[in-house]
Length: 408
Image 1 (tube, helix red, strand yellow):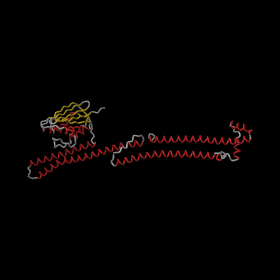
Image 2 (cartoon, helix red, strand yellow; image 1 turned 120 degrees about the vertical axis):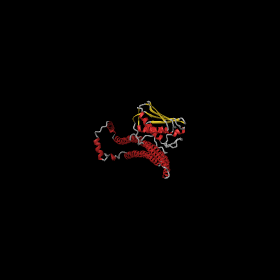
Image 3 (cartoon, helix red, strand yellow; image 1 turned 135 degrees about the horizontal axis):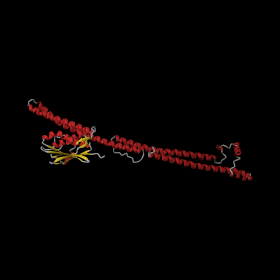
Image 4 (tube, helix red, strand yellow; image 1 turned 90 degrees about the horizontal axis):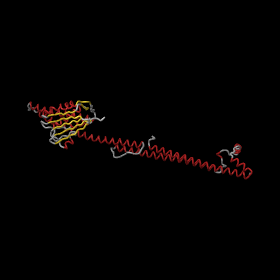
C-alpha cells in the first residue's frame, strides 16, 4: 500500500496537518502561559502594593522573600487560603481575568479540534472523490468494451494501484480487441472455406449423379458401364482426398498437431517423398533427378514427407510430358535447403503471390483443388522453415524451401 503514490500523498498531508496542529497547540500553550504569568504578576503586584503601602517597613523582607524563592511559609499561607476557600484553582476568582483566561483557552482548544476535523474531512473527501471518479471512469470504460466500443483509451501514466489497474485493463482490452478481430476474420475465413469446400465437393457429386443417371440406362454395353464406374471411382477418390487433406489442414490450423522433430536420414526423406509420385511421373514420362548433400537433419518425418510430396505432385501436374524435375538438397551451417525445380509451364508474377493460398487455382490447371501447397506451407512454417516460389512463364518453377537450424 505504501508503494501507492496517492496513499503516500494522503499520508504526507495528514502528517503535515498533524505537525501544524502540534505547532499550533505549542504556540497556544506558550501564549496561554504568558497570559497567566501576566495575571499572576498583576495579582502579586496588587497584593504587594497593598501590604507595603500599609506597612512600608516590610518592603525589603517581602522582596527578599520573592527573590530567594523562600517557600518556608507556603504551608502557613496555604492554610490561610483554605480558610477563605481560595485554594481551589477552579475558584481563583480573585485573579482579575481568570474567567476570561479560561474562556480563551477553551476557545483555542475548540478551534484546534475544529481545524483538525475540518482539515481531515476535506482532505479525505477530496481523496475519496478522486478515487471514485477514477473508478467511475473505469466502469464507463468497461461498459463501452461490453458494447464492443474500443475507441476509448484508459491508459494512465501516473503511479498508484488504480493507475496500474487502468493500464492492466487497457492491456486486456487490447487483447480482447485483437481476439475479437481475429474471431471475425476466422468467421469470415470459415464462411469462405465452407463455400469453397461446398463448391469443390459439389463438382464431383454432380458428375457422379450424371454418371449414375447414365448407368441406369440398361442399353449401355458392359465396357461403357465399366468406363463410367471407373469415372465414378475417380470422383470418389477425389472427394476422399479432399476431405482427408482438409482434415489435416484443420488439425494444423487448430494447433492439435504437435510436430515431433527427430533425427532423420535425408536420402530416406527424399525417397519417401518421390515414391507416391513415381506412377504419375511415369505416365507423363517425367524424369525426376536428385542431388543430395547432407546426411541427417532434425524434422518431423511423416509431415515433412507430406509437405514435400504435395509440392512435387504440383510440379508433376504443371510439367509437360517428357519433362524434368530436379530435387536439390543442401545442408549448410544455417539451414537445410531443399529446391524442387521443374521445366514446366511456369506461372505469372500475380499467380506467384497467391500460390500458397487455400483453394487458389492457377490459370493452367482448372482441375486442381488448391489446398496441397497451402498445407505444405503450414507444415514448413511450423518447423521453423520458409518456402518461396520463383517462376518464369514457359521456363519452369522452383520451390525454394529452407529449414532453419536453432541457434544455441
